[in-house]
Image 1: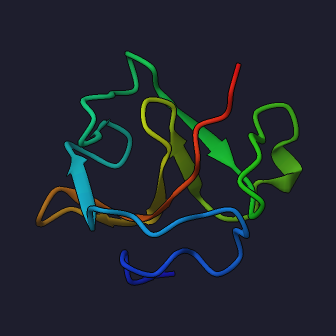
Image 2: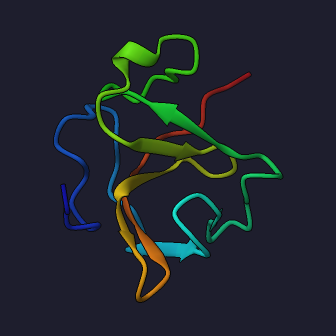
Length: 98
């Protein structure tokens, strides 16, 4: 599932194009987003193809997509590269009002 970062993920209707292609991935679960977010700060949430949080509905999480809770970048965990220590950003979701 390697998508061009300049093109939004085709199955997420609300996703916009990302301004970055990758983020730092110290390993497959320790990411640092360009906004500075890490798993131990704002964190990353699992999302479905519609961009909705799936933490309470894991059966809807069929692709390894995560949203940065700091800036809305969407990360495809399947693109983790152990050589370059990066993971692909496949789009960006608008921030929701609280």
